[in-house]
Length: 126
Image (tube, rainbow, N blue to C red; front, top):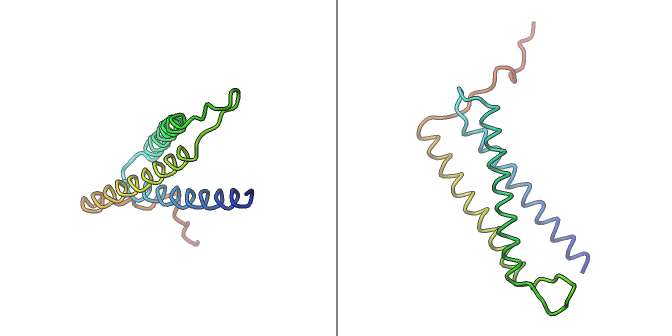
């Protein structure tokens, strides 16, 4: 049972890491060359934190719908609550992916593409 749990956490963690990295890359790709990078990335971070907070609230609400009150003094949730929460979370990732892909496509149509930051370019050899 412990091995199944650890295996599941490795898969969930890996999938989260891939999704997070891809979304961060998309965020950088969509920024126009003349944008204030600090403000844009600050807004991105605050939006992500809002999503995490709302996601935790909704996930907790879903678990509470399947609260098992048969054992007093012990908080137990039914398996259906965890299944619902996992499907909702996965659906949210797919919806976010579709929205990000749509936004990236719109940015490409407009011609918005981030140019290299001058300070990030290698210095010319003297």
